[in-house]
Image 1 (cartoon, rainbow, N blue to C red):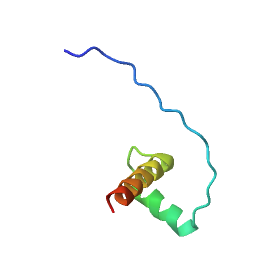
Image 2: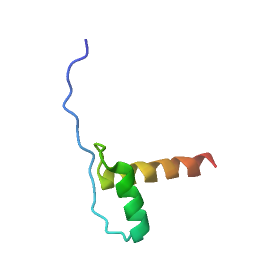
Image 3: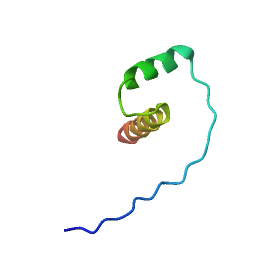
Image 4: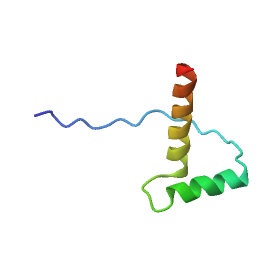
Length: 56
């Protein structure tokens, strides 16, 4: 059995970006009722976009 390891939170930096209002609404609709924050959704989307760029 593996020993429990306390997870570490990766370092973060605040960045202020502007989103078009319609995009904000779409993201908020997509995460409504789910255990996900706006920031977590955006981070996941950016990671996927970067992975797709690497594959291209």
